[in-house]
Amino acid sequence: METEDQYEGSCQGEEPEVKEDSSYVSSEYNSADEDSSLAEESKSAIEEDDKTEKEDVSVSVSVSVDDKKKPKSRIIFNITDSHYPVTKLVGKKVFGWKLSTNPADDWDVCWIDKTVPTETLAKMRPYQKINHFPGILSIARKNNLGKNLMKMKKSFPETYNFFPQTYLLPTDYQEFKNQFLKAKKPKTFIIKPEASSQGKGIFLTKTWEGISPKDRYVAQKYLKKPYLIDGLKFDLRLYVLLAGCDPLRIFLFQDGLGRFATEPYRAPTGDNMGDVCMHLTNYAINKENPNFVFNNSSAADDVGHKKSLKAVFKILEEAGHDTKALWEEIKKIIIKTFCSIQPILAHNYKSCHPNEPYNNMCFEILGYDIMLDSKMKPWLIEVNHLPSFTTDTPLDKTMKKNVIKDALQIMNITSQAKANFKEKKKLELQQNSKHFLGFGLRNRFFSEHSEC
View 1 (tube, rainbow, N blue to C red):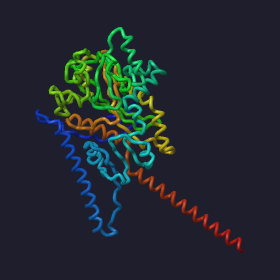
View 2 (view 1 turned 180 degrees about the vertical axis):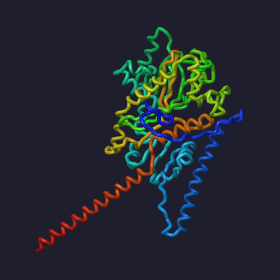
View 3 (view 1 turned 45 degrees about the vertical axis):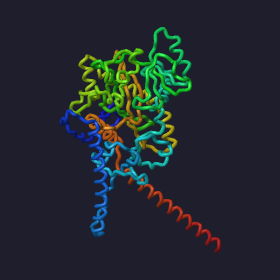
View 4 (view 1 turned 120 degrees about the horizontal axis):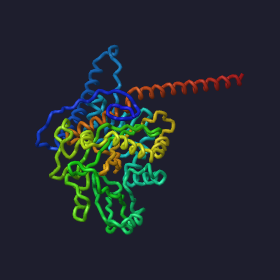
């Protein structure tokens, strides 16, 4: 794959790097300060945009008709249903777009923090872009991901061997129960609600007892021997841009996050299975642990319980591991996962816009969670279609700002697309008017001729 900014994919282009302040902040760091500061920047950006718009109107009134210049068309960035300040900041400060909170505006790009139904895509105009694909829940919900990957594994068992053994409850309840009844050695499973996030409702078990046949869970065989750094379990959060579904256009961001547990790891036993800060790597859970160390500077991305992917890879390289080979394996996992649902995505997209030739009205940034076992094999844990863009540390702010900026740059959003569409519609209207006018004249001619 070729490189596009910090994403890897099939497109080429250049975009000036967004510079970040690399100075250190106070060691007594408040994790809420960074996000609230960004929120204030975002709010001021919107207010500044509104003020500029009003000034433009007042100036235009005082200028004579001869002196007026055609106003430069600005891209309208609809953020009505987006609550992350960093998204608004990228739109306004990095790209200079007009931020809109009016759903009725004729927007160019829309960013929302929820799933997109097919009805929304069907109502969109060809020049508009939105940051989700209808049908993406086919891999973004734990139960759907398990179902689609297991389906592929039945046909390609040696190819789809990158995710833990999975059972969908209650459908697979008896088969799940048999894993304990027929096992020679006790097995540990991690049980997850089928549609939860941030580690909510997750627990470990060595028995089927206590799990009702009516409960809706995803049960996965627990990776008992994860790769450890400083005695801690961790996972990798990778950011993947899906820029088209037919054909698939996939870009992998070249950095990411390493998220660490906050208690030294021990194999699960009856005594420690309830210790979520030992067995789970979710940031939302571990940041509440007094042991959690926050990152205080984007320049020091190897400090704390949340590190950059590059910092984690450096640690692995120093331990003698081949991170280039690991990166290639991760790429294959991402591609194979998308392949499992490509027909679903293409069907939803084409049913809404069957004649749309550019395959670019939807895009999506997904969070892929990868865990390494003791043999350095990468395992796909889950896929998130609403990865958090909270920026409560300097590392988060730098990382997520660039993830969003590069994704929007790749999508090549310009005001010319809207102008071309409107010009095309105008010409079609003129042609139709001429057709109906000519039809009327012909009818009149034949009517008068018949009277003669």
